[in-house]
Image (cartoon, rainbow, N blue to C red):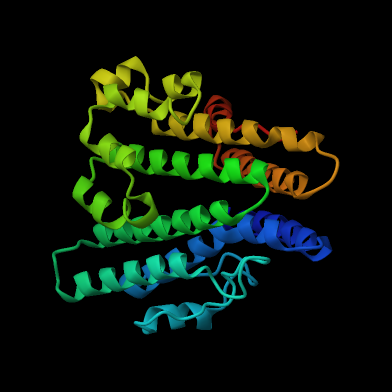
Length: 300
């Protein structure tokens, strides 16, 4: 399974690398691959704090020396590899500051021995890095001039916050830690904070301001409103992922331009996910019905 996933990852990143090389600007690929760079950083931090083995996702994503630099320095430092072409030769300052502040806050809490368990520490690293990544995207969406991609990024940020809150509720996590490490900086918005303090019966009205009613009803069903134990996390993530892909499918009909490239990258990502799911499921003899339930819609 491990060798299979590595080969599919190589297929995915080789495609992105080729597109980036052939494009007049690397901006679209830079924006799309950011989530994998932040995932690499997340795994690096987990290795530093808990000893979990860290193997870079792809050889050209981030340099080990840059990640060591991030960990060892207290002041703001440039990290090559997080820049986005056409915006800045270095990472966006506000976003990098969020990342560095989060890392330093976590190191401080651990030094003060505030009773973090290993699992708690891993979750807090997830919160810090997800916050930094979404704030990074938020800064980019403000500056980007391509309306189609700008709107997609705004929906993506909203949906990823919703998914994180749903996971926290599903796992009965400490909501104070969620507020402290995740709903900070650009995510410190009233409607996100309100969701944590409201029963799920009241989530729909807030979510419908950003998402279509049929999507909201699929995620927050009547059963969930009365009993959180009925929350189907897998179904929630699948519905939201399919909705995001549907919003970008119109890019197929744009003859030229960055929208078409961005749409292809979104489709390539889902294709790789589905391939891992199906082939890995077959190897592990997972029931066909269970695999089919988890497959996401394709771009083409």
